[in-house]
Length: 578
Image (cartoon, rainbow, N blue to C red; front, side, top):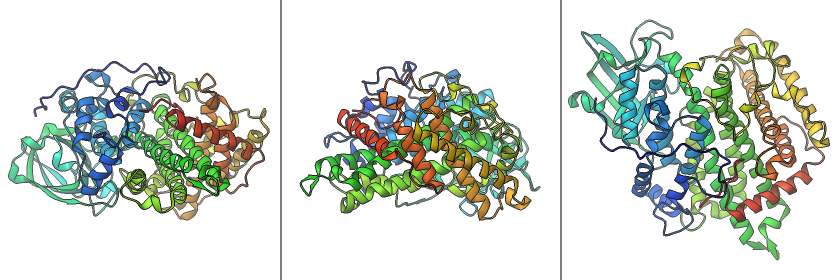
């Protein structure tokens, strides 16, 4: 195995998300103003590339100039991967412009490499680090079209033959497979049933016999059209036995641990796409006039914009908190990551649909100043399905929630405030500390019983509703028959899993508001956004709007328009954009 030749440019370690909020981050500066029609990596350029169904060459060059591969390499190996929430914020900058670029030159590298950082030997980690630091591409050949996310039914085999393993079979719907310099392959290494029959292999496609490796035709998609989804077929292809990542037969546990990282980061990165959609529609409503006023002044439009901004803050609170839990609560993130990957895309899609109503016919236009909206609207469902869909995330949660309900809800202690303090650094991400299944101590949900929100009348009512729901949810889980506590559960368990995810999002919002009272923005310190966030979440649980939500909504809308005018991000960090 040989690494690519180009070296990634060295960059200083980030000084923290609240350092110099008035200056765009380095990648944002490199990509420039996306609304400038003359910008080669602006919105219009990405829309045009999407129409042609290929990556924008200037976008790919910009990623290489930034050295994006270093973001996925641990600092101990010369990269910049330290905190999961920091990585997600880098990817948000890309997703604001193009989901295909964010996935194909971003998140896919994390999916392919995380298992090697977790279980690979020193030589494997060094080789893969050099590939990524040299701007090489990676691919994770994990799924098979016939079985989707049911990895236990993998049919591609790796059979011992002397000092080699012989790969035989195919993988399909794999991002970047034909362009990859390194491929992580999930293969069956035993005919026995169970989870000890699969192994991971790190394959150098340039080192295998060319007649034993065949790339399959590309799959075209309606969203993220530039994404190169293809397939690969191994035809009794020999690879060295040293290609096995970790121990033979331990792939499932490794995948379960590492997918927590990829689910968390992918959920958080999606906030960038919603930011652009909200910004596009906000700009339209502030410029467009109807009935002698701007569209933004119309009550329905104002309510819809406020709701979408609130939803973005909810998504950011949950996704960023879960990213930080990988460092703070590594034994619990099996459930948290699945909940975030389930709920964040759902909320983002609902918000996007509401924004499309305001943009009306312009939400379908494929050219002009609003064309980026329809591109992101088509990209969102693909981003939601990428890596693991909603059903798989719920099926991951269901077997674990009855134990958490029985042993920890209303008894666990609240987590360390560092979990929510976005400006406070964390130890480098340690893949070895992640657990395949959640332990019995649900510290994040414990934020709700431990919180004191009595000072604000609206928050006091909302808090009471959340605690009432948590008690009902506990009773619901403890009363389920055994079959409904497995991935083969009926609809009632899936509904309970959804309600848990909503409560988890509420806990994240409460924790973020409580423990960021030193945030530079007065808005983040103010309870108005929390009132709106909890009101939106309790509405998902069937409650009516709380008294005081409309007044809080006015403050949220004022912040939205202020940030739009100042060209700052709509997320909780609120950094200046280009």
